[in-house]
Length: 318
Image (cartoon, rainbow, N blue to C red; front, side, top):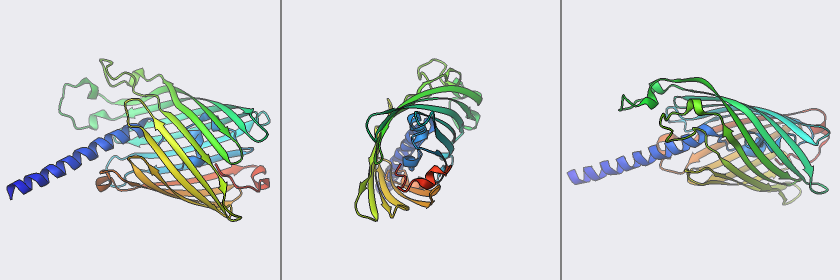
């Protein structure tokens, strides 16, 4: 009986350790760059080259609550607006992202500029630059730790500004897109480095994003859009999303996706009218973390401005 009890306790301990390690890895990822499921219609948050790629001003707001049953789990709120300038030869955008993970807070304000080069009769290659500032805070004194002499946890980080710069490429035509982005090439984060000996180096690290999608017409009423997103950062697990969305009668998107080692995703989006769209996504964790964290909810509202969206009869695919 005692042996069985010890085996059961060992199994519980292993599950808790695995869940904790998974939680730390994913939180560390989300803490530095945006992690959302409905990025197909919100690509400005990841790639500055997306700015001005439509012939009208476009905006979106999104809120994500992750791991609903876990205290201190990430929540993300974001807003973005972009528009073409110089007769469509360039684009401008602005984004605001607020991340809250555990004891840390990060308010990211960024401007985006893109320059567009025609590569064919209906295709364009866009080059993008991103410049902004993150206002970072962390209540380190609220953490529970064992080494009271550890200088890392002595004192809080209060509203430290961190200048950040990024770059992106984005090729697209009416039914296809391919993007490559490094949202943070450089961050002036020396003042928030939590390692006095410089063993950890910079707090913010470079994240690399590659995404692509294409729309195929199945019939008069149905279109299908497979897409993928690949994320990579040094010293962290490689991660990829595979998604498939179906468009019904140019108004209703519904689909599903898989995020490697992390979650299954279900999503819906409805084009209320030519300028207004709303979306919802639900993530269900597939790792051992699912027994403790619960699911993640994400709500998005998009609004396009001007008369141009009314004139466009084809749906917005991305």
